[in-house]
Amino acid sequence: MTINANTKIASLLKHNPDALDAIVSISPKFSKLRNPILRKVIAGRTSIAMASKLGGCSVDDFFNRLQPLGFEIDKAAVATDMDEEKKPVPEFLKNSQPGKIVELDVRPVIETGKDPLNVILQKVKALETGHILKIVNSFEPTPLMHLLGKQGFESHAEVISNELVHTYFYKKTDRPLAPEANGTAYSEGWDEMLGRFKGNIETVDVRALEMPLPMHRILEALKTLPAGKALFVYHKRIPVFLLPELEEQQFSYRIKEISDAEVHLLIYKD
Image (tube, rainbow, N blue to C red):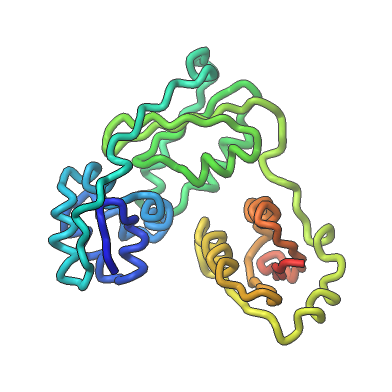
């Protein structure tokens, strides 16, 4: 694999898992990549150039550690994302009042190896219209910004330092946080669809995974799902935040609740 300053960390890890130890050895700041949840969030959107800037090292430091692993180096490519323009402060933040900003520091939760999504969503659900939730974190939570953006929230990330990012979420309306999903509403035709794809079903079991890994695993499986096949998913709960993403990607689905702790999904394209 030929790499350059713009190669994403996720691509390195996918090509050679040993790249993880090599990268962590460059700077202690990269040790957070050992956390599988953070790795999913950070690695896919961070290039070598961006990581070197965050880690206080050089692009050549990456090249020197990765070349012995078999990576070919292209030093001619120019880094395209080293100097990102500072995002303008949105009006909702300019006009904000201290009493309408709710702060939540999720760094202690992440340091335990847990996903802070549930804690964040509890705060979001309790947020009043016109109020702002300020998330204190060590990185920009791009997936969360994308997710809440679909629910009508405005967001703005402010990089304070390499280890500190403030992200603001503004609740404009009283739109529900996520679609109300229940097994009954989406179970119609379950047996019919199961019979339609008999012999053409691939399975994935995400019951043992912590959030947000189930959603990542399902979406990854769908990327390689052959035409004419369906994906059968074993899950612990109805994945309400996955459903809008499936609809956006033009997937249809059926849901069958087996018990309080087990749900089956059948995902396919018509």
